[in-house]
Image 1 (spheres, one colour):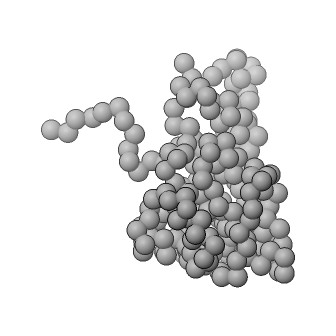
Image 2 (cartoon, rainbow, N blue to C red):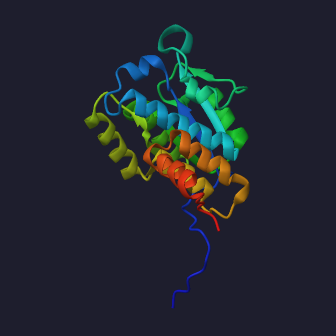
Image 3 (cartoon, rainbow, N blue to C red):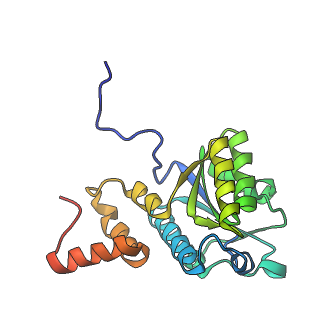
Length: 217
């Protein structure tokens, strides 16, 4: 007989069991991105970045040809990690860059969470490579984008078929919080949601303003 217990499933992410890699959120890459509009993409990048910074997630920020071609990383990301150096690459596949892999090994976490541009190149490459090397890989689908809906969807399917696990930006934030009784991060989590959590954030603002409501007990 199966016996239920009040414990989280092993497939859920926790702040300290994974490395977040944010890849090529840069102007030149964003110009040709059509599967998600630029405002939503920047908003979701901010949501993921603020969640990771707030919960102390090990995070790698990497760019491609930053000075010579692709331009700076989104300010929504770099402002969340003001003292963190960006690892600039020549390789389209982040997993083939020695400096990035040295940092992945230094951090030493068994799970990799990916977000960036473009889905079919700069996310597929590290996802398939990391899976082959034994990592669990998660992809924040709405913090990725590609040159067309088709390109993004085929890339997501390819990664899922290989074993990657898709999720969304808001899901990432709430999975890190997971329990409203965790009062030490409650205000931070709801504060991020209120700023960049879309309609959910508006709902929190309304409930708190009108009724003084709270998700916790």
